[in-house]
Length: 320
Ligand SMILES: [Zn+2]
Image (cartoon, rainbow, N blue to C red; front, top):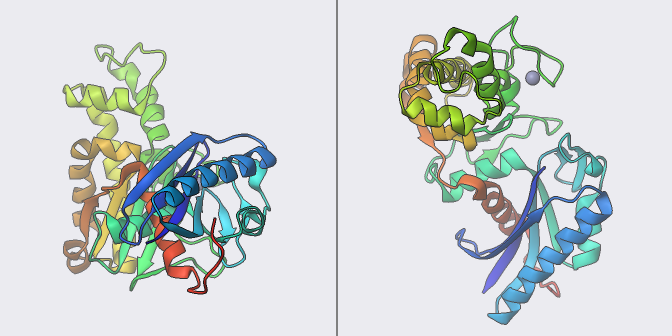
């Protein structure tokens, strides 16, 4: 049986898995993402060899590697242009380097796009052809699939949903603009807003907490903490403002919401729906299903695997 190697090259973690064409994972391995370019390549090669060894052991054939990277990139040439969270990779022709090392075909895609493909093929958006995927993590990522095809834009930079302006005079953003969705609906935004609002909520358990995570805020919200509920109200409201615009422009069948901060779903989604109802045209607003992502941290890996299966040439290669 044919399987592919799929790699999610994240800013923090490096994952590698053996995946078949139905999105079934047979083996996976992970490590922290090293800092230098040479160490990253060495680590990818060693994880790939570990997975390939497992494949051989059970008689599977490995012919390709799909890589999801947190970067702007040229997927046709397999070159990473800019990776703000893994700057060692800036400008790297990662596919040709790995093809030389591993002697198999390599394919590169942006991580948010790969997650969208993962969810559309194997996750909550199965059966939908036109979807928007929003990932609420440390930042806010996006992927757009229209008529079954990923929309990359003319320069490969499309889908930056996190940098739609939702508050014209709002918080300044790493992209150089201000009031971006990422500043209101990401895990980092949840922490920032909690700190910003908490002087009004001296009785909140979050009031004097020195170290805060988005999960702490979610846990407090589940217990009915008013500060946490206020933060999720803001988060959901701004998300709805951003999504209402996308719904009017793209008329998608579904919007998949994933990433760590989507765990707070029941606390923010009513406000998101409220804004969509208020702001978007009625027909596309009713059409667009809001779906919670199903694949969690594996969306990028499974999307990278699907890309590798779709693009790999049927020509027999030696494999590893
Ligand atoms: Zn921005």
